[in-house]
Length: 97
Image 1 (cartoon, rainbow, N blue to C red):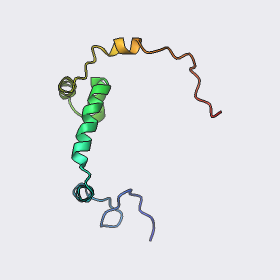
Image 2: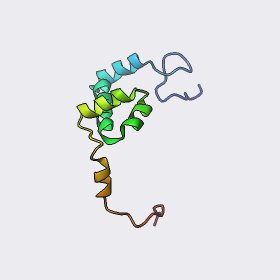
Image 3: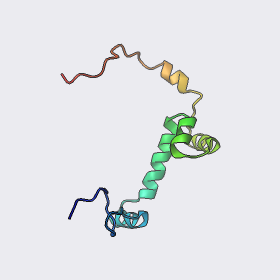
Image 4: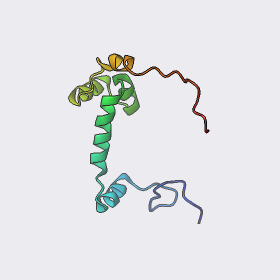
């Protein structure tokens, strides 16, 4: 049998596992993917600009703005935060030495 190209192969040859089946398997292990996904999205909403957040998720900008306000992602302070970061003098790629 040839190896599957899918990380989580499904019951039908050449097909990935369904979202429902994967969720059931993870729940049996005590992993709640819906909660983890929501937490990751909420964290992301506080860390990146609204436009990028909206485009990345394929949501309307108004929704992204609402999420950021809801989760305290205040981009008005972003420029100030960036300006306070230490200036990096070494702009070359990291070496392996």
